[in-house]
Length: 326
Image 1: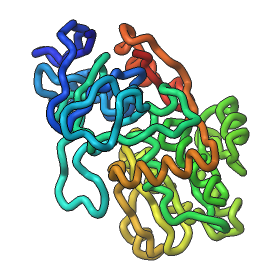
Image 2: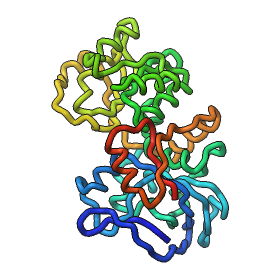
Image 3: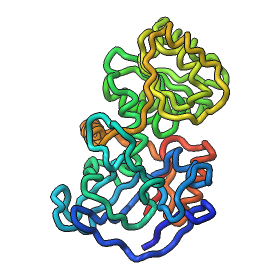
Image 4: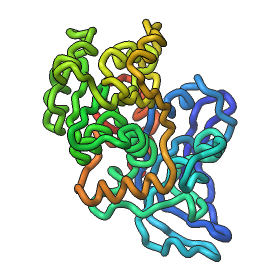
């Protein structure tokens, strides 16, 4: 089989190895698609240390090719996707668990052996490319908008995977969604996906005030904060009294004018989101299936061009998820 492994120099290399065999309680998955997340870029370009020999990527979907002794959750032929946290099945996560690409071999391979507990069934209406986008970005969005419903306003930043999933899931819950972007072309697509309003943060850098104007002075009840240091000050300006800011990333790590007093005055809850459990993934998949939601995919790259896919994601030109076909 073909797979990518991290070399001693910190680069990812395409190699060939024998396909693995599942042991007790394990499943052999023939991977049909994997997807990229922002975290992968730091590992693929050497900015984050990864043990030599590690297989990259954390999100994938495929078909059960074989099962080992004692497997009861799946049968050969089942369409599956992996849970981002392979040992967090539900409830609060008290300590960090092992992660793909860093602690465990990931999914940039044609075949993967995994414990049956680390998999869930795919929503029936999705194809493999769509399902491969769910483990990290979609569950992060699901956790970020938790509690939002009819009458609430959710603000999403940009048009990356987490933001677009948050837009779709918040709309499915009955919430109003306001989005920010730097592109008028992307603004049209955000409106088509269900955003009520889109603010261009280039022409309106003080977009927190604009959010308040659009909500009659109240502000957004939930803000999905992907920018981090570079946008948190505007998020505080935009958030409603006793609202929630869900910090999911730091893609704009610039110096910020963050003032803790602003948080105190607004009685804001700042919660850091690190994906979710297998139970969260299963709950989200039921909502996705019920509403027939489809992930937004920008481009699908062939397996041998996986590193080109990473470069494309790093360029910031994408609208939605970047996927690799196996």
